[in-house]
Image (cartoon, rainbow, N blue to C red; front, side, top):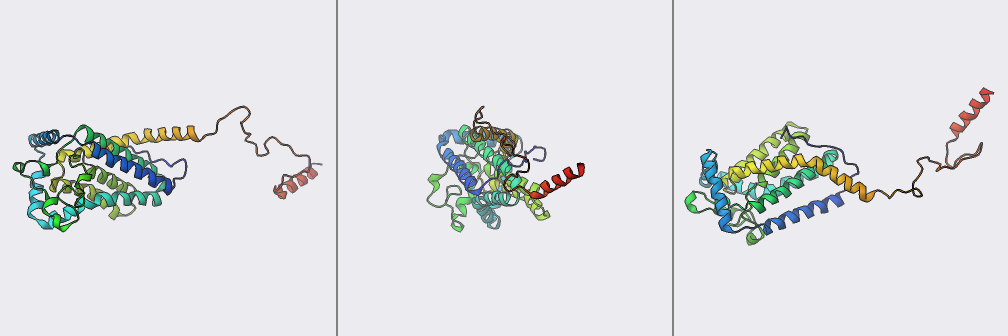
Amino acid sequence: MENVRMPYTAPRHRLRWWTELPLIAVVYVAYSAGRLLARGDVTTAVDHGMAILRAEKALHLNAEHPLNRLFTKTPALGIPADFAYASLHYLVTPAILVWLFRRRPARYRAARTWLMLSTLLGLVGFTLLPTCPPRLLDAGQGFVDTMAQFSSYGWWGGEASAPRGMGAMTNQYAAMPSLHVGWALWCGVMLWRHGRTPLLKVLGVAYPLLTTLVVMGTANHYFLDAAAGVAVMCVGALLTRPAMRLADRVRTRFTSAPSGSSGSKSTIVSGGCETSAGERIPGQRTTSAGADDSTTAAAR
């Protein structure tokens, strides 16, 4: 992502948390509702999942099987991975948004716009390409659902990372692209670019890499899902500058007062009024007047 030019420009007006919070909430609710509405039929989703798996095997990119076997046979890896999959996605991203808003306000607007655009692009992917994750394929494919296997250790049930009894509130076939990986990449870029300590920069590199291993090892995503998540973030980064310019134009059009011959205002402070000799505008400093009088007397 170092080659992607991010438009880190200062906002033209000060952003307020009471306007930012509803905006983010609206986008997230629209995204969540869109995921539910984008449910395709199971047969199509399974076909897409099998096609991805065949393509990966042909390209020797099938890293999901060995990782999934490792996580399944080693609870010391599988259980923390399940906790990471079920929680970090929803904790780290908002935390970094708040950190940017408070500590890097000049960078916040572009970062927020990039994240939102990429999330909406991911929703397009869910709609056009419903995909069955590895864990929901036929058992003969060799995948084990670690979230279901270790569900007694956490709050999630056997239906993705949703809390028990709320599986119907999530779309289990929204696997392509992986926004777990996409959002983790966004977090990593923010930490790398704006973190001022070596630890934050190390976390910026480690977090997206760890997330990629987790989503594959828990059998929630294919490697190509992760690659698609990266691609979505790259496209979102390229669209951020045009989107911000468009938003500025719209804001200017709706907030600027209509101009007219009678409504135009003078840029002169006095508004076209003149004062007589020796008369002062109320509140005007007298030192300059005294200096002018002494200068006039000296000229005489």
